[in-house]
Length: 318
Image (cartoon, rainbow, N blue to C red; front, side, top):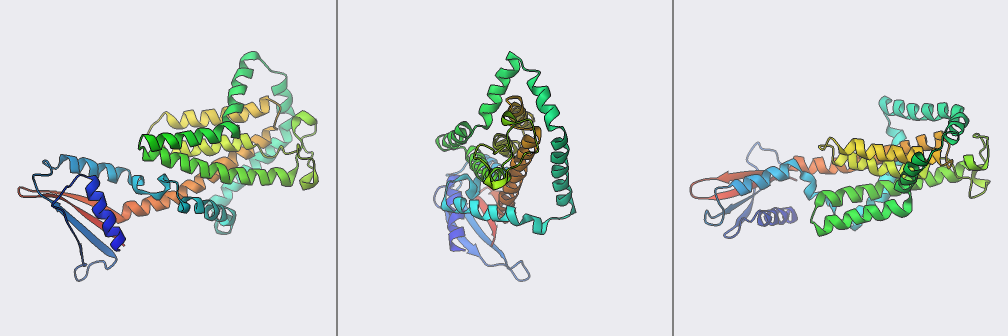
């Protein structure tokens, strides 16, 4: 509790409520919620204007509580989340509801349907090649390439550090976690199934299993998984911008189509890989959204502006 009160006092400093500042913890009144603690701070009228700055900063914090979520900083707690979140994802079928089983059924059903037409789609894509389409395919392949996508996410985090942009840091860290988890799952599928790529055979249903050659790792598409993992995080975190989601998912779709066009994957490979990237990112986002919502529900900032004093009351539920 003391640590949280100190954090509240620090928060007041960031709002530039300079001395004299007095912070105290008050006990809940009789009949009040016993789990609610309160920290109050007061500043002299000479150190703060009419309160507009306080109200503006308060409104910003209430609109975007993620600014105070630990996920926007690279830390040991964040890295531990890779293991805990992976465990949650693996064990999630044990707690699925009917809607979750329906989603799984749609993914498996769609993959199965594409299995039946994989060869036709491959033949169509290979017989309709053009210089323009090949240029787009080169871009799409690069987007999902691990050698490019991981450094790009890292560069975005570096930008967030230099520009003090907590949103950029949060997006890059969530994207990195989603990439890592979905990549691990996709690699496991590739190893277990040992499916032949379309550029080494005409039979889409050839699976060698884990004893096959290392090059037979067609199912599922890692590039598609990577692209949709990042696109899902970006689209969700910047959902207030109507242009971000179409652009993010459009580029991810270009990656998936490029893998088929380049004869590197069957259509069922890219569909399932895209589903893995999307669903893993949605899961990771939901785990960290819970943390963000809990913080937003616990922290309440109330500006107080009067003739003799200007201050801020910070209420925090412990």
